[in-house]
Image 1 (cartoon, rainbow, N blue to C red):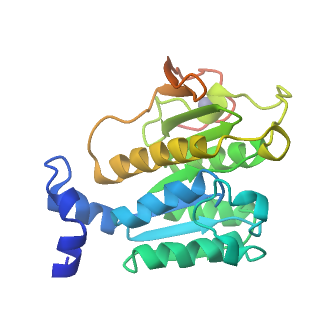
Image 2: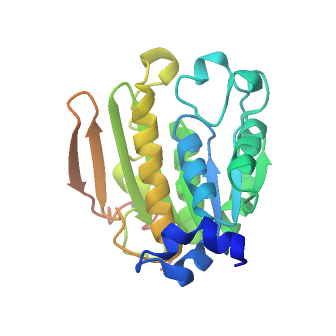
Image 3: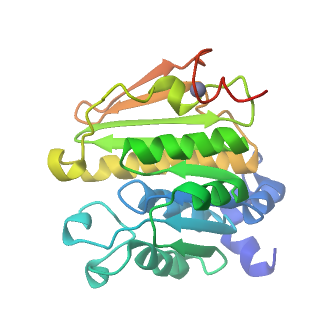
Length: 251
Ligand SMILES: [Zn+2]
């Protein structure tokens, strides 16, 4: 770190759990953020501001006026432009040391596999089950820690699937596919603006701890937030020994 970086990150360096070593680990890390919407925006902002060295931001959509109520990387002037470009500019203004790769596509197949393999941590900030399951499968395959968040109406949930250890549960253990869970979307149901900020920021916190190697993560616990009552609940998660995704993979 040069003098400017020592100053920029001084409030992290003061924390004994992080220190110079932890900060250097952040600088040397690469995070994959899938989705540059309500969750991805605050998550990416904190990862970039906190000094994560490389960030891959992935989203196929363009900025829409209805996004601006909560997707805080974007602004009135970037309406109509790809979210990842709008996001990269905003992140660059906050921290030019963070190298942001903007992928303006729906990450799937081989591209998803490549990106997950190259990342140190994966943040699922997507808004549909197909993408969530695809990200989870790739994270199980490559044994990458997955930070998963969701927010709709006033309800949020967030957890970590630390798939570096094969005994830990995966997303599919919790939400098996084919249960025909009805997909609820912000476009139809609405979403409370700061709820996405709260959940996305918890995702950033968990990702930073995973990268720096400090503290305890949400692995094995699902946090549920009722933002209307402002009440958090914590539910223990267990691995499904019959899970078709993580238990089928060779140990
Ligand atoms: Zn599983």
